[in-house]
Image (cartoon, rainbow, N blue to C red; front, top):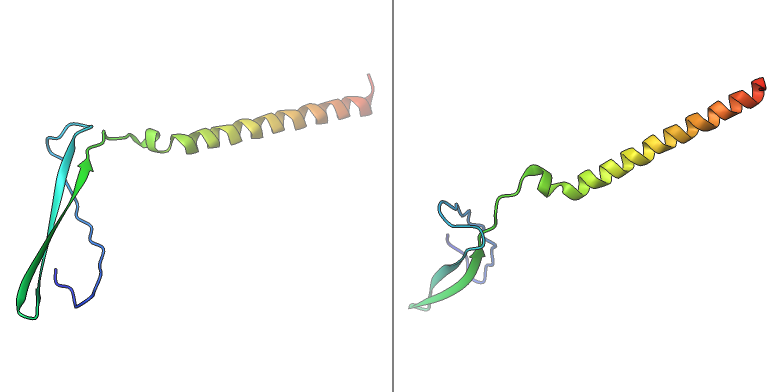
Length: 96
């Protein structure tokens, strides 16, 4: 990748895990080279990559499933309450 003078750019690099176990950490290195007024410059940087265990669809969305379940239960209780109030009102109108 080539950059213009003073240009900044965010770069994403996909990493494929073939053999590392969850919880493993590996160093990642980057090397940047440039020429400045006929002099070659190089800079190296490093970071760490942590390997995480794969997560299922339900683990990723667990919070939202819990919220949806709570809303559905509250809605069902509201329907039951309205049904009970309507039933009691109909009995009061028709008498005992």
